[in-house]
Length: 67
Image (cartoon, rainbow, N blue to C red; front, side, top):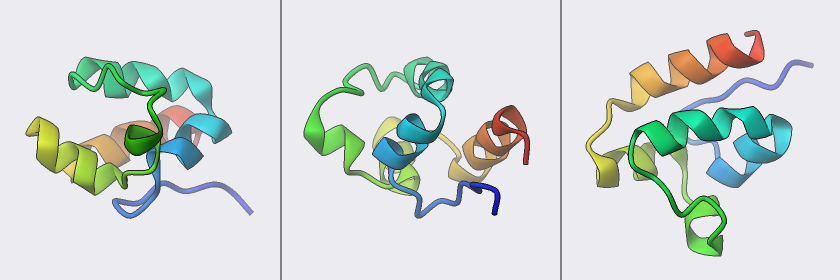
């Protein structure tokens, strides 16, 4: 079964599946990807904090990982 990212997906899970997705988090200003609290946030939570559209980021990441 393919790995599909949703707004509820935990950032740490995304990074473990495909570390190259880090660029998308860095682009939105999330430079603390290695801190435990950041890795434990959902994609939607991180987007809210950084003022990013979660739906757009979900689409970008899924396109990047081949979904």
